[in-house]
Image (tube, rainbow, N blue to C red; front, side, top):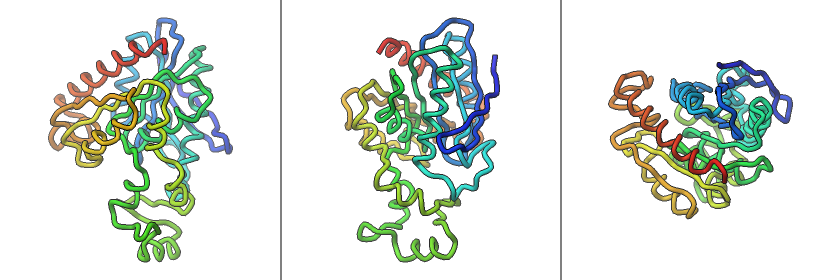
Length: 271
């Protein structure tokens, strides 16, 4: 059974999520953190995973973080620290709803590195972290790959855009000054390096959004992290040109991912 829950983040930002209960009693709850420009269902990936976990006896809580889904905040107001606080509040609520004592966190894309950062810094008990096609280096992903950093500073063009518009636009996404200033200090790289629990990266080697090579590089930061390839899949584990992740072939790949996650959660259940 699924229930819509409304809650607030540390700074009072109103948020909404979906709690998926399981019939069996579980001492852990899985928190699902979506990617940028997405929402709690993650094009069916997270709603499907929640259903799979419920059948396995594991409850989950997926939520829209600020500036996404049911949140009416504009994208340029998004901050990395705000998302981390949203995740903290979601975890506390998920634990209370499930009557559980510990969490597993699953982060997709932009939510991946932040999930690792949160898990490495929170006082909430975290048994494991799963990152799906994760963004790990936010500085590089938001600015560096677009040539918007010169001599370790925002480029002149990006600076002018920020001054004139109040945000920098990259790939159609508006990044405000608060988030830009956080990029040097909130890092999935440091999060993954400092993680004290087992972690898993699942990534497709045909990913056109977040290169598979980045996961190959970052998995070496922590000897308790492992990388699993889903061959031939794009971002979100889509097959071919399936941008909305709805084709039968993509759904079959999703079921493969769900199975890998379930096995990993069972392995780390008592960590």
